[in-house]
Image (tube, rainbow, N blue to C red; front, side, top):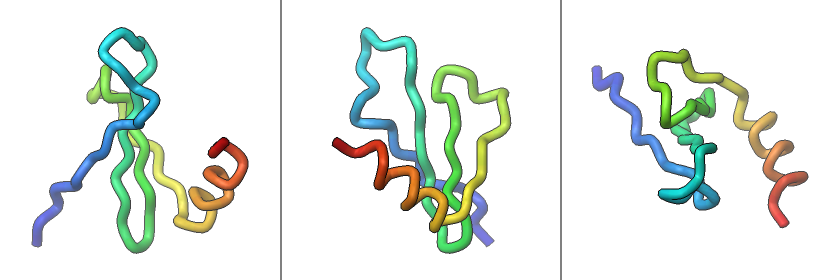
Length: 59
């Protein structure tokens, strides 16, 4: 079984920005991590919670 995830960097993250997050999607969980400190465990939320979050953050 492949446990590797495909991580995607936020479109708001840039080379000058100190705040960078990456997201990996799965059928049962969305994982969010700090791309500048991979030693910190990722945050895991349900797809429903992620959708609700995006609903209020996308302009």
